[in-house]
Amino acid sequence: MDTPPNTTGLPPALTLALDIGGTKITAGLVDDAGTLVHRARLPTPRGDAEAVWAAVDALCTETLAAAGGRVRGVGIGCCGPIDRTDGTVSPINITAWQRFPLVERVTDAVGAPVRLHTDGACMAIGEWWRGAGRGARFLLGMVVSTGVGGGLVLDGAPYGGRTGNAGHVGHVVVDPDGHPCTCGGRGCVETVAAGPHLVRWAREAGWDAPAGADARDLAGAALAGDPVARRAFRRGGRAVAATIASVAAVCDLDLVVIGGGVAAAGDLLFDPVRAGLADHAGLAFLEDLRVVPAALGGDAGLIGAAALVLTGD
Image (cartoon, rainbow, N blue to C red; front, side, top):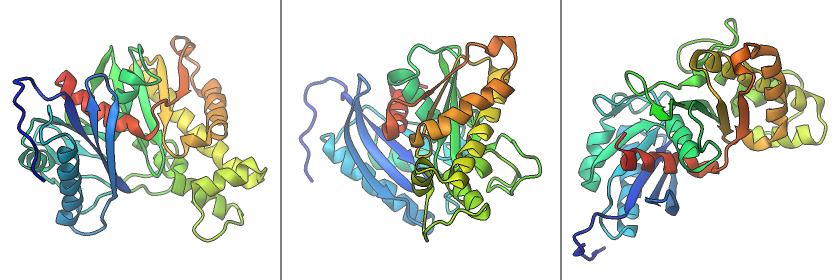
């Protein structure tokens, strides 16, 4: 597709954002006000490294064309671990990518500056910039979905740590003798609260689930009064609460924003989270800690990825 040249002499007003996860890859265009003006999505391929890259490349091409051929830059939120120093990614749930040179590939494909962070960090940044976390100085953003991820904003600025992986709260250990985790550890909150693990536990506890049932089906059963389904959400919510209490004590948080597919179950998750916090967050400086639902839904990661470019993070 031919695109007209930019003859205004002004920088392009749109940022290309990528949100790369183990289930889907989403690309978008975000304006300087943080408004998502274009979105495209593909499932994450299960093939080799180049098959996954081909999907990212196709989305970059389509989205760049929608922008008229030029963008201010590219912000990437990718499931981790990542290495911001060398621009590579080694996601636990995209096993074909090991030290994959994502920043280099995207830079070559788009021809614009590229910024990289974890998908959880981008969710947190998006909610802090334009969502439920506006104005918070010490914020944890959590995604509770197929996995559990997160990111931190500390003292009013995104915090990535030494390699860019700070805020990887899905691998806070809540059950030292629990199930093995894909990270190589055991008993991480992800093994308790993530959607597939909620379903696994409910099945083992006697939930008579239809074939292929997922966390949405489990939520429907819980809302209909199924006692096992409700226990599964209580168990998951209390594990999330224990994680929040630990991270809040270390980072002196004032706000936690929770999004993701499991969080969409609403009070089924949030009621046991808040009850769990009453048990676990007993320190006086945590008395004012608030836990709220995310406001931007699935767009938070794209908006946060764009903010990486706009702030130069």
